[in-house]
View 1 (cartoon, rainbow, N blue to C red):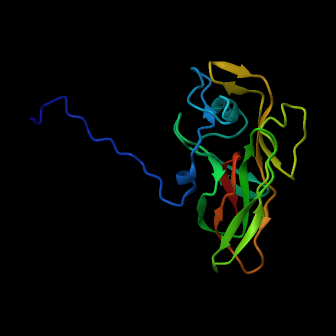
View 2: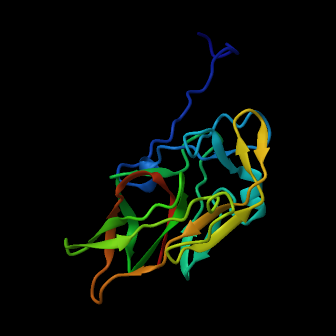
View 3: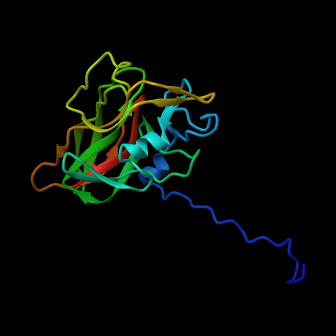
Length: 205
């Protein structure tokens, strides 16, 4: 190949998630674009997904920052069609830095889901923290927000594979903030095993 060969292409650099990070725990694509067939995402196993545009209108933009219960979080910046949330299957997630308080940002599918996660402190001891989410459509609009969840975002619709929109209010929630015991800081969190619980990000403080 000569230096003037126009067929030469620069190698593509792939970003690999560091082991133990929340990005490495992502295993589900739950956000689709309003354009197209919406089949790049399937949040609930039935072909439904959040709308990227509707979430942005509600204040959740890729890589954007927000707060829940006074704790700070960063919304996933996953490219379209790539995993953007973790369905709870026992993953352990290391925090970027030790935290005094923690909240999970996400929602449940197929009804409300109530369970607990395990936190590991910097001294090696562990504790349990509530990880219960209300169903993402609050039971198709017929229920109420449960477990002290805070509404982080509300959209007027969700997308359905096949280019349709489902005009049902759809939510992203945050769990009630968990405060570590005095003298302890949270190092990591281990999710429970409940695939109907989805975590987009962690809010910490």
